[in-house]
Image (cartoon, rainbow, N blue to C red; front, side, top):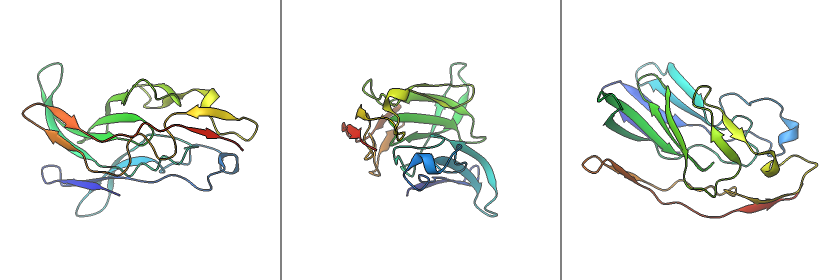
Length: 177
């Protein structure tokens, strides 16, 4: 997948992929460190932080997409070093790249239905059970599909406009166990 380097923090930022096997009933728990954005020291490899975007990923959303670095002012006018990551799970995450704290997590658009929202205090997505892949359930119109709303293409950030430009997919799927 993609990674980014910030010489100011001397950190490398990258995402990890989905857990296996795909059958989610065979791997209980959050499957820690999968679907995680890491910030690691470029010299030692030591992890400064890890933020898991999709605990117990059921949909193969493999979180290895682009990590875009920017500096933007927060609500108090303070300049912050940020990392923005549009994930295949349909959420665009922004972290403070110095410590990994979650700044925002927003749906790419209103058609994302596997999650109702992301709890900003815990960082955990709030799932909609109707779109889960459990063995006793036929889920229709899961959005996004396993391809994701954002796959592994490149994106960019325009610091003058303070705008991100990204390619997205609008593909949903049915899941039959």
